[in-house]
Amino acid sequence: MSRTMKAIQITHFGGTEQLKLVEIPRPEPGPGEVLVRLSWAGVNFIDVYMRNGSYVRSSTYQTPLPMTIGMEGSGSVAALGSGVDDVGVGDRVAYCLVRGSYAEYAVVPAWKLVRVPETIPLSVATALMLQGATAHYLTHSAFPLTPGHVCLIHAGAGGVGQLLVRLAKLRGALVIATVSSPEKAAIARSCGADHCILYVQTDFRMEVLRLTDGVGVDVVFDSVGKDTLHRSMRSLKRRGLCILFGASSGQINAIDPLALAEAGSIYFTRPHLADYMVTADEIRGRAVDLFTAYQDSRLSVTIDRELPLGAAAAAHRVLEGRETHGKLLLRVDEAAR
Image 1 (cartoon, one colour):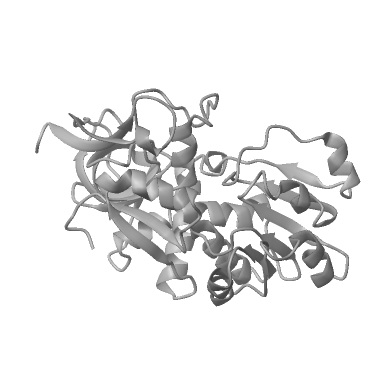
Image 2: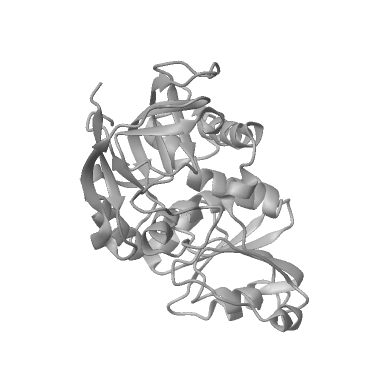
């Protein structure tokens, strides 16, 4: 096993030009840790936020420089640290919320790993980790959807958006999705969306109120942020919940508390996935739910495109340009398919 590896690192916060393919020492697992030989790395907006410095003040998602990017990956166990007995060398595994997946190897705390059944491709397992777990906690924990609930999902044709629509429908909710084009509307409808709003043509708030007879929705799942948040809050029914879990259009710096009252005494939360993945049982419970739904053909996963590790900058440009129609992956192991 080589003592070095290829990885995508940044030495300064900024644009995609900061992403550099470098050769660095291969890490070694310590007590309770596992060395994973990566096949796939997932590309997510959290990677963008880490690259551009949005999380520089975050204690949950720390961003020390120089930094290997990537918070989601899958592959096989290459070596074990002391005290690890629940996985073995060669096991197929996936994980999220451990920095450094844009690399040939990563050291991961054993409790954050999930075993991947042979019936699930590692590419699919990668998509079901960070994005899948995000859609799962939003629909099962942050706001446990039940039949009769009406939800608004922004970016309904994106990687998380598609999974959100599918899981919301599995929970029995009525789904209103916003999208940017007729093509994306067709994708959201194929995932189960009951209504699709082209936000470039229509004021989505007014259309939501029309579709709900002026009542509004129970919950908004907003990953867009700056361009949508205030109208999202005004799309809710009285005492509804606005969940801001991303900022693809820009970060929100402040919310006027009175705006929550004026919108109908609504509630607002800006959660971190990490706070819904606190224990091994919680992580593996979400993964088992998602893997089982995929195996039973109740949940499908759309892989938008696969790019080589060295094309990480291009992958970020695609993501930030909102050009994805599903999961975006980096192929770390060229033999992985």
